Length: 178
Image (cartoon, rainbow, N blue to C red; front, side, top):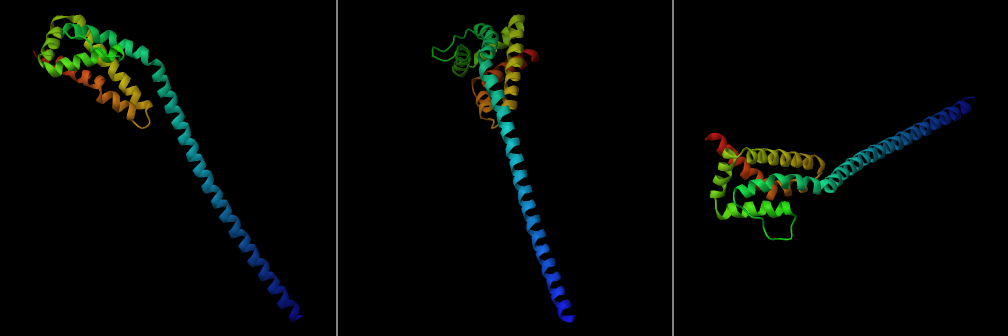
């Protein structure tokens, strides 16, 4: 009877040990699956975010001509009031006018004074400055929200759009001070 008890206890211990090994193995597999699921969920979330950003950026690109025309219609009267002509380049007309304004300002800082006087004396120029600044600011805000890496928004804000916004903000500030 003792021999059977020893075999029974050895058998019970072996079954217990195997059960423990099986439980540990199962828990490790569950943990590994949980880790994989977490990583996949994170990857899917990143993909969704990238697709939303790409869709928003594509919407901006598709609507760029409308946005450019809107900005252009406000910039032309401002540039004309300062006796500025557009650049003669194959760029979009918005960038030709913005470039012409910034080129003239870099060659002749008195352009700022011309714009300041135009803002003070001509309410349509003052409205054009306000509209241009408001629409350009909204465009940059929209770009910043849609641009996941910030490259496109930075390109616009550091480029001609941002430069003209700064110039017009200075002119408006000077006009309001006098």
